[in-house]
Image (tube, one colour):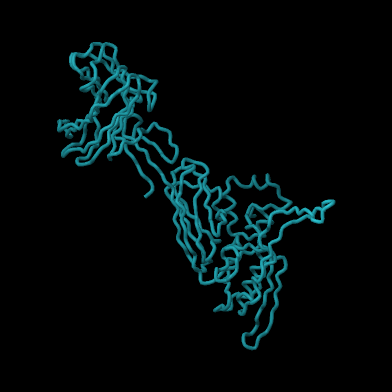
Length: 479
């Protein structure tokens, strides 16, 4: 699990509303009183203060908090207190272990700790609760090597922390503001109950489905996100190119969520990562996960309609599905806009070039040998102006793992074969383009019009999930 919870067993760790549980220890020969101060604390504004009205005659005295309950025998505990002395002093922090009836068992104490006058210092000790221990009193007291408390001397105490473990942790209580992937809470009442600090480390897990039901895909689960709204993006990287997974851009996740990538490249190592752009988990690091979709065939589909997917074979199709013709993918043309500027006095013109484009005029010509497969491909070409071809690496071409193809004029050529019956050849050439998205607008729609239709980014993704590309172009409202 990547959700961890710390529990502070001290129910009034910083005198948040009162000084309940705190007791002034006057020390030998001294007299002291306890008060509550509301400003100037180290971990929170409030703290308890011990003030001496009579000086001690021996090095002793300080402050005790009792009692810390909920202890378990045999469990190690880390205990710490933030203290400030008005004089240079040496103190120790100690836990008196008690039975459920309040009977004293033993004490765990630190060595002498030096305090600089008027400086907040966190003092720390670890100890294991002995048998029959269920509660204890936590104290900070002057010790050997220190000084007597004089009249007007003060000892300030706050930030009490008792938690299972042996590591000195940062203080917290339920009043802390949740941030940086950590949520703070009081178990019951503020400043009168134990408190928790729960750290959420978002995780991403993958399940690969290589079958055509409706198409090869990757199922992505996002988990261990704080149970509040976090805006995230799920990204897919293959062959060095990073793209957002459809439907998972500016995606609100509360706790966990699930999405399917119906456009995962086939037969290649695909990496997925989670980017958190706002919310309590903002900026949280997420370990990238990789997978390979080992499908038996390549795939051609409408990128917006997963159920349109048709298997695509390189050499032989078992049921008459589309098969690439011999000349297919023979050349990849990479064009760039270019202007030549003649320079007077020089035979060499200057070339001004734009961005080199993805492959153009790519030949995806294929053949179908079964009537149903011919119908399936014809319907696909009619509904999807932009096709998605997901080739296999075995095609032996430097095609990207995802080929979004804009083909203006596919040509259907039915032919009769004595051995195979009707064979349909398809001349399909096109340019590789960017993936289509549901937020493409046509001239009769304005951005404001579309924005008024949807309250969130996820709303159109959900409402338009069953629509074709042309449906969305005609009516972004889905009606």
